[in-house]
Image (cartoon, rainbow, N blue to C red; front, side, top):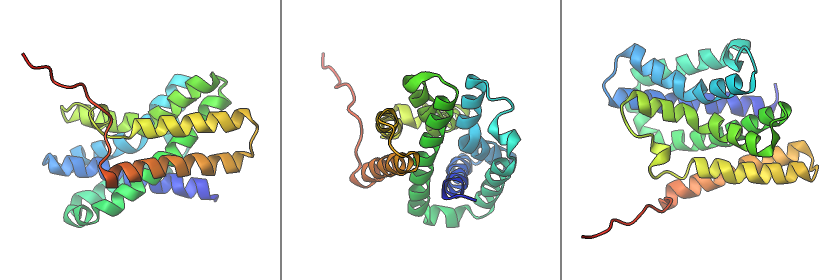
Length: 204
């Protein structure tokens, strides 16, 4: 079992918890909380696989991801107060997952020969689409479209990954650099409260 796979499972667990805690805050039942958790954790990767023709999607090729998502969601449902207390730790795990998901998404895109631009989109989708579907299911504008520096971290990491891949940099080193960049941007954005600019309201 390699380190990237372990981090991938850790990210899946964290994403599922973040989705499930959103369901708890909406006072959903166990099924509703689990659906939000699973969608958040594996939704992006599943849609990515369908788009590139990787059938069946990864969650059916390796059901460990599905089981981990369900387990994390159930734990969050029954121990939501504890999860809320550890929310900062969850954010760090989420940032790690974001970096790993971005790299995996880009790698899948490159392996399916859709070009660097398409591969970067696959990386962004893998890291963000699950959360977007979660928010839509809750009847909200996806958080990633409002203020969070989330998708933009994936884009920066993806561009750097593509650049180094073009230069034939060692794959392992490239993966480490990309993951580190995405995690760093995301964590700094959280602790410094960074946001992308919004249009100023016009008077009159």
